[in-house]
Length: 317
Ligand SMILES: NC(=O)c1ccc[n+]([C@@H]2O[C@H](COP(=O)([O-])OP(=O)(O)OC[C@H]3O[C@@H](n4cnc5c(N)ncnc54)[C@H](OP(=O)(O)O)[C@@H]3O)[C@@H](O)[C@H]2O)c1
Image 1 (cartoon, rainbow, N blue to C red):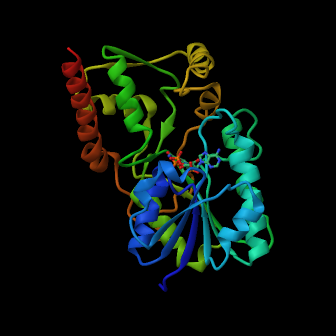
Image 2 (spheres, rainbow, N blue to C red; image 1 turned 90 degrees about the vertical axis):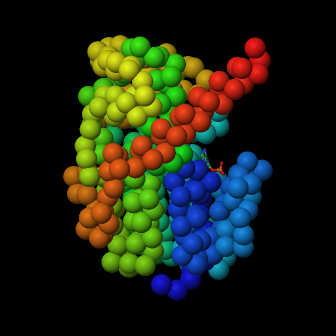
């Protein structure tokens, strides 16, 4: 494939950092838009990746950034609302501004990150509804050649699923009460998600498609958290909360700084996050399993964090 000029929104996050380095490694020239370049100095690694401070809600700023681009990749998304970060803004207004700026600059190709179960008709989870609205909006915009991606939960170094549960298990060492323990997931490896984006870049038959991305196995949330405990060497017993207690947990933890769990998360988890039409195998990508990848990063990063905590405690005493 010829080297392309690519512009990535949301490229400084978990998936973005996996994707951007891969695209640069393939010889593409990658511009990553960010609201806060000072927080992402690690991206200043050479001429193939350019970090550009941009307000992604500002059409004129996006038009300036999109000049000479072959493709726009939008990864922006938020799991929870906080401060000025709202679902409507990040998942609907921002994609609307992106396609408007693309039309103004004549850039046609868009790779858009959505989520499994995103649905404009979703009645309770505002995360899934707004993701569905943004996805439909970009697919229905004339002259935009879009491929959208609907992954289940994504894992890999730096993820906020296994790493987050490893951290929470450390705070509740004996018994871990878990909301929505029976919800099912088909976790997909970040490297396989990246492969799907790379495939879409060079494959015009994927224009107009909405690709469901899942890993090879399905697990209940309880199984995944129990597995996390095993990998980080904890004997914690993971216990599923009854539905009424899960709702209460969503209301209470939604008020805690960092929002470890919210009522909107509770609503999202009422639907299993598993693929009806899994796309990876059809794209020639063999999805990798949780068991093959998670122990390669979770055990180590967890032990490093524990060791760091031990050293700072030792220094204080
Ligand atoms: N991680 C998963 O398991 C998973 C599963 C399904 C779908 N997804 C979707 O995949 C995408 C990427 O996920 P991720 O885990 O990589 O997310 P992430 O680590 O939180 O990164 C998202 C990036 O988007 C930008 N951003 C965050 N909030 C924003 C806001 N309110 N307005 C504008 N920009 C904002 C940030 O860039 P700057 O601060 O540099 O501007 C951030 O680096 C999201 O759309 C998410 O919904 C993720």
